[in-house]
Length: 96
Image (cartoon, rainbow, N blue to C red):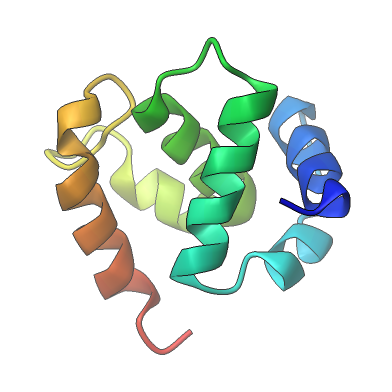
């Protein structure tokens, strides 16, 4: 992952309030999201993959994170929900 993307992720994931325009420019596709999750997981290895995915989503698209939180496909506490989460995310971001 590019060092600039990792820096933007770390800034967004650790800030109380963050201007996310830069992050939205670099995370524009599903493969970018996967790369962002992998990069964030390297920076925050104590997070489970589902937790990392939710935190990246929160930083990238807080609107989608709020829609996801607490639903039956929310992988924050359950990594086994990641396949359903990625299908949900693909449905929500199709055409973006």
